[in-house]
Image 1 (cartoon, rainbow, N blue to C red):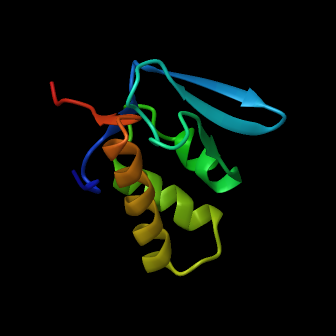
Image 2: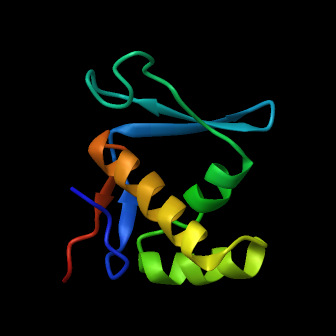
Length: 101
């Protein structure tokens, strides 16, 4: 499943987030979630900045607008990276799309 700009994403309930020595680490609570080679998923500074915005309220396009304000990079590059990052997290079961009410 590919991430869509109009969708809202939330972290899975089967995940624990910890900050250790300034790094955000996502710890799956069920087997087969995350990377098959490493069950922990560590976020860099940019990844953490994005992760904090998956709040179940904002559409991905809203997060994109915030990133465009925060980072001095071409807008198309930020968009591509955000969709790619979000898609990886969805495929690994770390993020899920919030169902519409």
